[in-house]
Image (cartoon, rainbow, N blue to C red; front, top):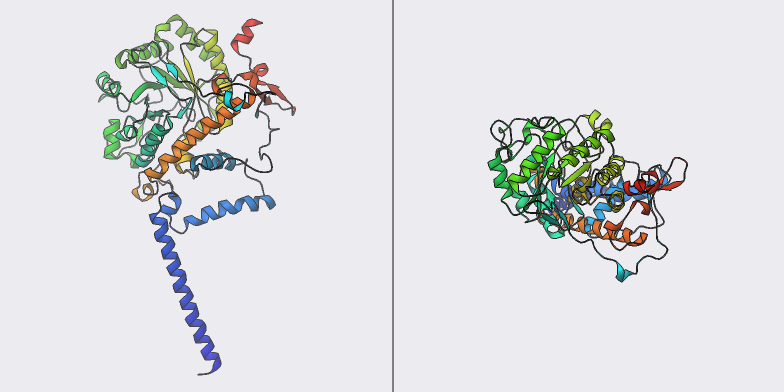
Length: 496
């Protein structure tokens, strides 16, 4: 055999050995990725899933030279998602070299730092706040930041279990969403807010109306603290929930009280509520049957309509809602028509101060608590809402990010790669409850801590003392103006 032939043989053996070594490495990585419980993408997509983390890490360097997307992506940009990710991991959320946020964009809130803030040992945490003082069983809510409505059905079983256990650990409430009360909402032992949607899932009779017997049974559970009557959702005001047929398993059908394997489309409004008088009748009825605080969730379309609501409440204060959840038109959902998502309903940035002023004008500030919802996922969002007049803030997508959501935009397709919004066991196995619930708790805890830091910076001892005067809003002119001048509170207007 000549030298050339031997060289070729040697190269061939080396190539086979290299392929074998590569195959062995890939097999080891495959096994490692399948067995680890931390990263749902790697667990569901062994080996290939590693490239997402690699590209995400390298993106920081590539963006220096080619493009800057940290603050440009929608509906949530990379900077927002990465803050949640670091908070959920328990990592430091300090950054280097300065903000990537363009503070010259009109509408940007800027907090007014105090020249002599309280010393580190002079700040305090928010005390629990009572909701529904007039109910037979009022709720003493421990946290100003909580989990917004996400139904079991829209979310997977492990996602709901992780949220429940995380909520318990962080001391926040969990809203069931309109899909009824599942055993998985209760698993963690957290405080639960039961949402009643237009289809009355979980408390419906065979005809689709409200069943007082089922409602009373739910209310007897000590973990269920309040009831939220959903009139509208930010992403689809005027349209009911949409649950695709492939998500209606036997279990979900039993929890909701609907046929298995059939798409479930909720009515676009409560059929028995055609006026604000009807609404107060329903609130009074729900409070009487359950004995617990009852509120509403809605989207603001105009000041005139909300004023009509408060005029009706003023004439019947005993039937006033114990809380009003204001969802912005930018709110999220698993499935909704694009025109409703894009074009209908006020932003929470405009709606919240408006409703707060109306509530105070009609003397309901000690009777009705305000809850802000709608794309509020970072500390600045939450601090702004408290300054604008909210008593509580709830987030859904922020907690989805804490579970590992990568904004794949497949919530309505049953193919969520992180296992959060799918009922496909193949994808669900990527979401390991024992790992993800800790992320949920850390995210909630870090939000609360950093909102306290903002409050401290502007010179108040705790977050609920934030006021509109503590925020400036950037204008088209390139100059900022105090929020209390742009959107004065009712008390300020009344004093003039």
